[in-house]
Image 1 (spheres, rainbow, N blue to C red):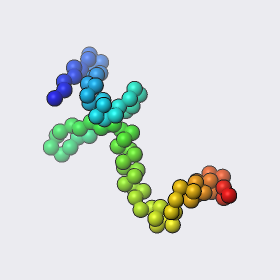
Image 2: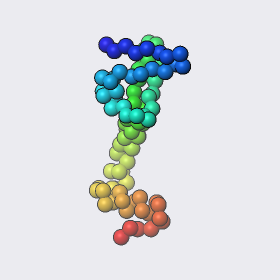
Image 3: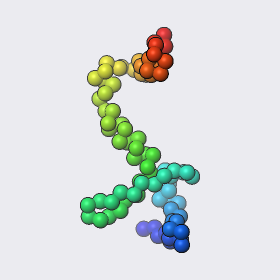
Image 4: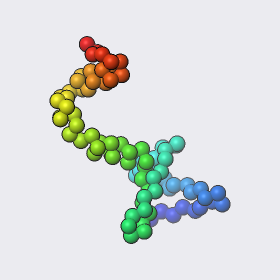
Length: 86
């Protein structure tokens, strides 16, 4: 268990053990999630966003017939520049 004190400005220093577990670095944002039972959970907002994006895009490459990183780059170039990168 880790404790932190709230300052007069509402600021809290996240204990080092928690920063390490959440892989928090200077400038990162923390996401506060309230569960149905009233419990508040904190997460690294960047990591949470990446996980949500990965879930949202799961299976999309296969459906589009993309099989490797070269094909991904070709698609990016087509969208970015309106042409093949070949």
